[in-house]
Structures are given as C-alpha cells and as structure tokens.
Length: 100
Image (cartoon, rainbow, N blue to C red):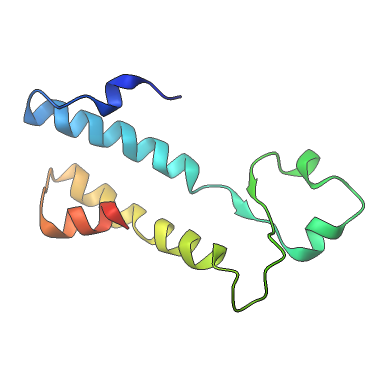
C-alpha cells in the first residue's frame, strides 16, 4: 500500500498530479471505515469479526470524543478534492482542503 515514490519530489506537473491522485486514493481508503459505537464495543460478539476495518470506540465523554468531527471533516473534503484534482486546480482552496 505504501511506497517511497509517493514522497519523492515531483519531476513535472504531470508527475505531481499523479502523486496527488495516488495519495488521494489512499486517503479515501483511510476515511472509509465506520465509527464503532459504545454498544458495539461492549457487545459480547467480537466486533472485529463483523467489521474488520473500523475506528475504535475510545470511551471518551461525548464532549471529548472528536472521532466523528474529524471523520466528517475528512469525508467532507472527498468530493470537492475529487473535482479539484480532475480540473488540475492547484489553488489556495485545493491546498486548504488537502490539509483538512
């Protein structure tokens, strides 16, 4: 899944966008697992068997559980970034969304 070529300095604009697309595809995979609930974490049946990829419940108070906030923040960038990548639009908006 990982390879060192993704961290190389791009040699051209085409190479840059190829790297962006590869990193974006990886980011979409990272953002795809669901969030485990407290009930699922405490259930007798092993949750890993049903959902091998998930973001674990952390046992934090509702005020301190920021998993959903960051999960939603990242996922909200997917469609706009997909469009900006398709347009090859290296703009302040792209940089801001990519950083989010």
